[in-house]
Image (tube, rainbow, N blue to C red; front, side, top):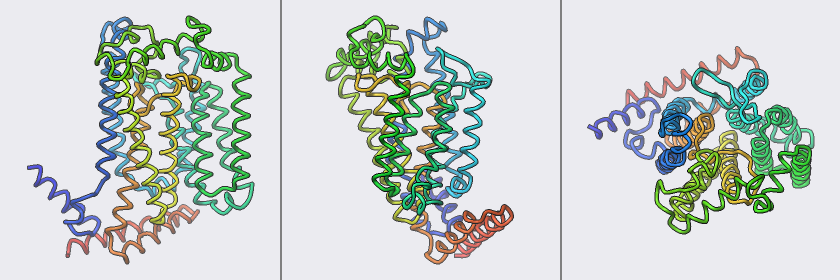
Length: 437
């Protein structure tokens, strides 16, 4: 039955895209990327269940409260990823500025009608669900930045004005994030922006100038707010006040110490018994280290490293295939994944101050999980379109590419719709010819 379904899917793919059925039946998607993603999500569900049971029992009378919610978020994230896989990258190339405006509107809305938790206003309540606008803001800004680097490549690499334009946009986004406040997201966006500008070929003096200004701004923001300064001082010497400002970090370090090489066993953590707060979200890696040991930590970091390297590889292939937007977006997702993982794990082991960032695909969190799965789906879609380009007949591939570029470059809405209609007609002709074959 499964074999017949695969054969049918191959026939449908061949009919739609005009490629041989034998070629269509293999290597349509990056299977290792999909399997590693599912593995991280599965491990995350297990660890979140283990880490959240004591606090869920005390607060809600149901030890599986957070586990059930996390499971629902996993299903929603898979649905969102499935939808994104059906959307051509042409949509993201054309509409990324509007997506950024939508994200900025959400950031403004959370300041007006958002829900405050522990002094931070970062969530919009929608029925039983909560939305954290900072998460889609990261993805949409990276998509905008990738589009900007394609549209203004010469300006970025040749003059200072083009280099600073995306930084001005980032400045306004950062202002709204700092008003929540959400300092960690600003640091992630700034780091990813600098990485993309560097990969795009910005001049070194411009790049290092932004690095210097960015570091100065970060230091200034830390000094201006007392709670941020406390986090830094406690991170430098948490044992100076182990029951005050250094409490969270000392409990996390004890969890790592108890884990040793192979851990205490799944479910046998002491620190999750409400000694370590936020054990199922920001400090989930500490609980994983205590229960599964150094081996478990290496496994998680190895899987995330695979995703990062895969994203960079897809970005490199996209650039070689003449798809700069897709290449820069894949690079941005890879940098985002690596830096957010480094900050989350680094905070739990005392290497960097606590920033409140989740561990990608593992930590509890609805919006962050859904947005990260959308980012992974974008990588899969980029890789799929590159493979599809390699299987289309050369003449048809050039024609479709020319019409797509024309649709992207035209500013008039009527001309854009006409170009899209031409692309659609061309693809229908490809399908009909494949059917005759």
